[in-house]
Image (tube, rainbow over all chains, first blue to last red; front, side, top):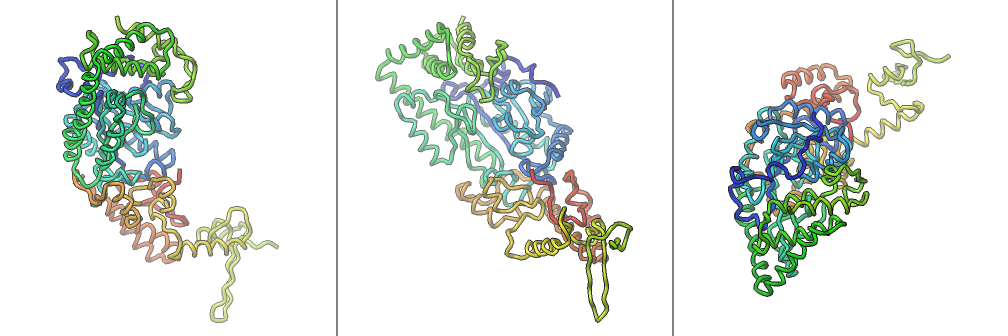
Length: 365
Length: 187
């Protein structure tokens, strides 16, 4: 297993996705959708679930998965990280890069994660379920992601036997995740809806469509700025294709449409005020000497809106999205060599405002 | 003088006197042999507590006792407290209890559609059967029904080892004297 130290700074390779990258084929929703994620929950036959296993049994699960052929996105190389033996700062880096979940950072038991070279794919072993497979892509790309994910699943299934029930489908430690075990989500940027105080519209629609609305880093995290992760809660009684298609073709576009309508309304109401707001934030990020995480995210959100509306030129959405990652505490600490008090998962700790201001200030040249 | 075990020179800690058809028979056993013969041994208490343990065991077997998963020992109460089941076979053990919970969480859906590993259904059935046989084997040994135990062991052998065996081997190689049916130790 390697140490995550070699984790590239800055954006994940999948996030960079240039014009020649086949994954960057659809940017039509990038103004409102930062990234897409597909996750599968799987468990092995013959083992208790993680919550009911001994450390020895969990080590055996790790061993089994490491011996399995991963294939697909891992063909180009796989990095195994023994998370139990990894330093807190590095665990937090993996979390900020959305490669592992928050509970996985904090757990004590034997666990590891396989990461593909382009960081688009990771397999957490011994999270709540024996296997949590996930794939990430920039913008709205759920259908191709899901297709690749199901292919990876089939490959794994050749070497691992999954727990399955004829009526409940793929079995999971939490009874509410059974069935397909698939969770699709989109990280959305909804600043205009917040400005117009129409976020309750999102909440109501989400409730009607059985969706979960979560924060910047998924389950158990708060909304940071105007960023929300929307995901399906229904996993049983519908095929994978059906669930993904509805989410990608109906649900996400509906939220995108709400946000775009709000953006149009803002522009119609006072175009100059929208301009002013975006450029003030850009000016602040270019000049500030002390910058807290919350403040940084707030102004990056305003700049992102300005870029998406064409009010700020010469800045790309992907650049703003990269700064959203680089401003995170562990990334900042890693880049600057600061040692942060990371017990509180980045919220508390040493004062990193000066370091953040310096890093962000230098990012616009 | 202290009595020794009927089977070895160690001091006896279990003393059983049975009068059958007017004939009195005495059994004296050390801790190890008592366990082998199915007596539940308290760890640091006197023989008086054995009766209590046996009563507890009888209670646990009574239908009113809270149902536990035959494979991992998780109870429905624990599922409600933690929101998590203990093993794949919990879905068999608690199918009735879990169904309404799942339906509520899944907007009324109660049956899986979609992907289906080709051999999965058969594997779940085989694991359940293996588990049931292992339980019966333990009971048979505890009740000294050795012929029945041999038959059960043969049937388990015919089923073969599970392809993904629990590391503690609970499914296929049960400790015949184990007093619980745990597929794995609680975390």
